[in-house]
Structures are given as C-alpha cells and as structure tokens.
Length: 151
Image (tube, rainbow, N blue to C red; front, top):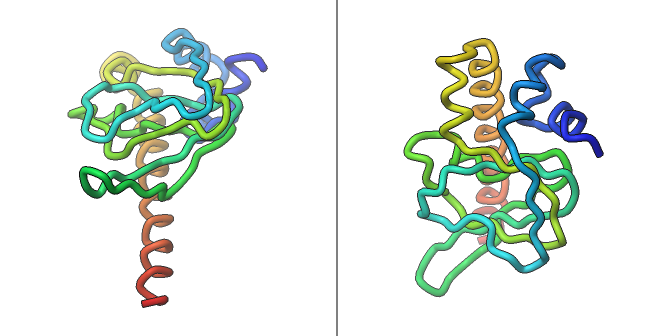
C-alpha cells in the first residue's frame, strides 16, 4: 500500500490534508518486524513512534522484574509508541510484534518540531496524539473495572 494512503487512514494523521500528509510522509521510514521481536522497551528513551501498515503488536506493561502483562494491542493503521512523540520521549510500555508487522517509523522529536515549523500540522498531530492516549487510558479503565468487578 502507498505510504501516504497508510498515513491518511492512520489514527495519528487522518486529520491532515494531502499536502500536509506529503510533509509528514517525508519524515518516516519503513520498518518490518518479525513475530516475537521487542520493538519498544518500557522505560527506554528512544523517541520513536510507529504507524502500522499491516500486522499486530502487543502492548505490554512490565509490572516487576519478572512480571509482564499484555494490556492492549494495535493493528493496521493504528499508532504504537505514542510516548515517543512526547517529551521526554520515554516509552510507557513494551511493544512486541505478535505477527510479522510492517510499520512506518517516526522520530518523535521531528514530529514535535512541527509545532514550531508547521503549526497547523503540529496542532493536528498533537490533538491526535492526545486522542490516542485518551483511548488507551479508557481501554485501561475498562480492563481495570473488569478485574475489580471480578474480585
């Protein structure tokens, strides 16, 4: 699939027009991850975010030295590694490829710079990032309520 088409359908960039998508498309590179590969590591300051073209990743919380729990997943046209877009660009979860995954990789600092260099794009992407964070938080609340209700 064409890179711009993937970005246009993504939760992070769907509010951008074609010219704006062209600007953003120049900022990413294609990546492929085999099933089982750790892409992002909780606590690591790597500053990258990804939009999935195809595949599936698990979003994992590491709650202790030997305890991990997959709390969410992300698939086609969804963003993972959103915390790589927000200072201090440190991942809040570990992300592991569940299936072979093709994604577009962005450096968070480059996306953040859009707020200064192209404020209209920066504002739209910042709002989309907030929406993604809110959705993930809402999903976590639902999971927590399910666990608490069962207790």
